[in-house]
Length: 399
Image (cartoon, rainbow, N blue to C red; front, side, top):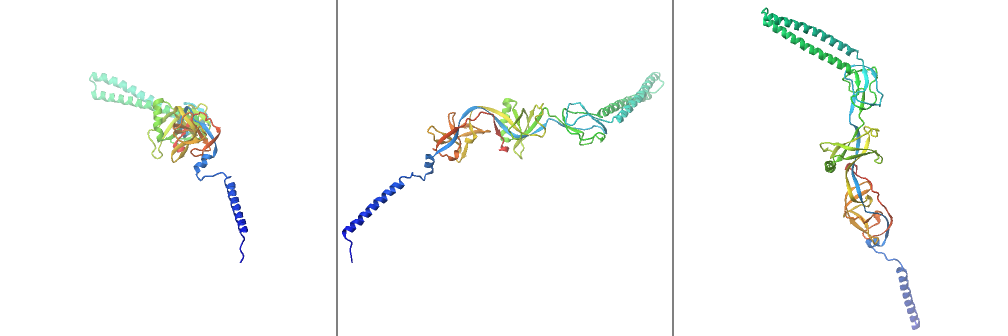
């Protein structure tokens, strides 16, 4: 058996000690040189700098509108019909033209009505002659009665006959008036002013007073109206505005809600809420001399309810919703953000009016909120100035 010498043992011990020191030095060199990480997400967000877009809180007068889809309707829509039976002899209107009340539109063969008028006039002359003869006899009987030559019964009978002829003459006069009226009805006139539609009956056809289709339809388009509905929870604000202002302004926009068409006013409102939809029907009226609105056209109606003076507002993109309610990320002086709860009174097209939670000097984050937490540092690469414009609130049915 052989044993190691003491010199070899010391040599190996020295090697082990040197190796241990080298390992410890390598550990500190590799691991300490790496950045420390934290498992706490809040600390991670706090150390990260997020690039965001911001906007200042602004103040101004904002017009608040209620918006709804509406349908343009003529103030009157009249079917032109004949009041008598006869052959349509002439048509005196052009399809699509503007007509005035009383304009002659068509004529019916009037010869039969002229004959009826002559017959009634002849019957009147006959009955007038009978009345004159009866009056002469009545005067003669009165003289004879004074001479006691006839009985009073004869005089009474003659008096009744005179009254009978007088009644007959009144019937004849009414017959003449009726014949004249039928003759007038043979000329068809416009019952109202407006634009006349396509012709529904051609010249030469027999038409009747009982026909349901008529000759054409006249739609009154100046002025013109539009009907629309709003949710029942909007009604109190509208009725209050009507009591204060009497007249409410209404604007009509095209189907895409991007092109302004015409301005009018609220004309009337229905007397009861539709229980099936929870909405109330309204009617707006517009002066339409240039025919900017057309019957049955779909338009977006903007009803001006009030103008909120000195309102604080921010872009709607800044408004966030969470378990804690409605909030925004407010940028502090040290370029960090804090979660600020706010109360929004109404949300407009691009703007939200702030009732509580912000002041005019505050700045809020508009874009990049998904990167933020309480205390996150931000880099405000852009600051957006929201232009002050008329804002419109959409009805619940369109949200």
